[in-house]
Length: 83
Image (cartoon, rainbow, N blue to C red; front, side, top):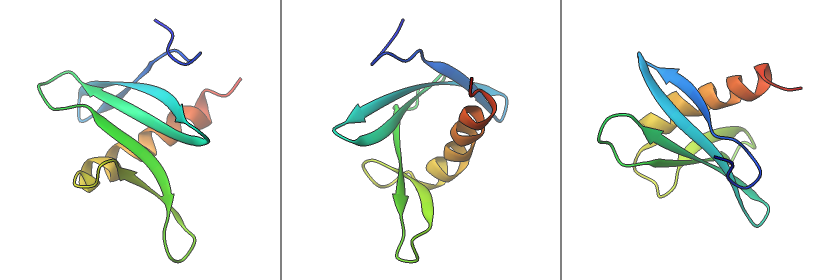
């Protein structure tokens, strides 16, 4: 299945496979993460803090720990799968 012209990809976290899709809302790039267990899907975005450093956060807020664990795996995937 192709969504928004991009294929979903899979990453692994703590032995579990997560399916990630990339989407755009206007100019904003977001990522939707589906879990193989019964957790609700997670939407992630890269934001900028007051010191102008990028960080991963969840939308809506409230799942920051998951965002901080999964976001870098998404970045790693893109860094290592550029063609």
